[in-house]
Length: 465
Image 1 (cartoon, rainbow, N blue to C red):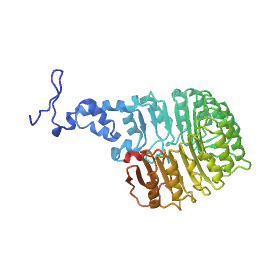
Image 2 (cartoon, rainbow, N blue to C red; image 1 turned 45 degrees about the vertical axis):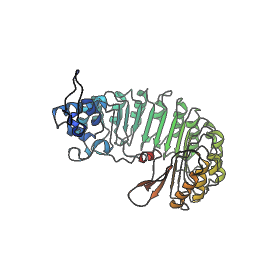
Image 3 (cartoon, rainbow, N blue to C red; image 1 turned 90 degrees about the vertical axis):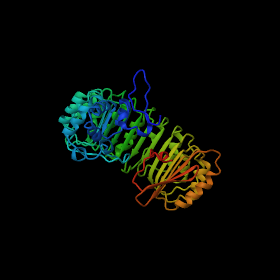
Image 4 (cartoon, rainbow, N blue to C red; image 1 turned 180 degrees about the horizontal axis):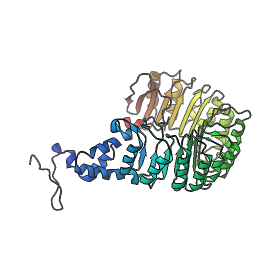
């Protein structure tokens, strides 16, 4: 039989199909549902007009959608004449998928995520959350950092979403202290809280569930009552992750806050990024970090050799370390960090006085990222590749004494001394607009990436192989 007739499969006969003439209409409903789950929202709506069957299948595919966010890749372009989301458009989408949603993520594109976001024509108001509550009864995660919230909107969240486990809130145009207090008091299952661009006294944090909250992520927070802020940290018994970025806190309270937020021995991750200068830095909090696995630290006049020595002494379980913007760190302190036995990821930025003399100590490091470190040389990077047999990812940017061609040549030679077949990926900056990836050898992949302010360590470089 040169050509098979396409027939629907029944219980008593096999399914015959000519591969050369198969089209999408011959696929069963399960296959179509799977395909439709990858379509952006605007295309999901459009395909409902193709035929009756596709309308039914498209409606079924919405049940697979658990997250609704603002990423343009998820909404598609040209939605009803333009990528601007209004309340009527949101209601139309929520009618289709709202009852299946668990995550409502209306956050702006961040430096960790370069996917562009659609623009919205509404605020985080009571009117919006009333619609969301009507169509999305199962939500457990809400992120509205991309919306301007109102006091009434926060109060509505407090009264109607008591089972939320993950909550992220952005700029509020009014004084919402009382609303936040009510929200935190009612959200007794809250595990993760993120607040960004909010002015707050800090007393509302005293109402957080003390034995439930595991993560606090506070960015650009203007705290007017640091004493209450510190007391709230002291009461959180299950805290595992603390992230403080560019928060405006009186310098004299920063030491107290660092001690308060690290006093729980179970803390696993600490990210501290603050530009304020401390008159008398207190490093006693480092002694509380015995269980820490992730440490990212940037603070003027606190990041120095003494601090790194304390970290190396107390943080034996450290797996991921990021240090940035310090001229007070030398090879003496940096060498203590590179010798940590469990260190897998190391990133240094703007460390102007470190050299490559300590690189042979980095036996366990799997990923190394270096930005704006002017004393590093290509030969030193080659020694790192030779000594660290498990090194799989290397990113070098804005290091003036490292030449890309020399680095690649040195890497090829260094890899020949390895007795394993681990692939090494080197990511270099590129001045032109188009990125490029190419293989130099079987175990060396080079990626020339467009220069960016921030390149996430989660960048899936191995997908290019």
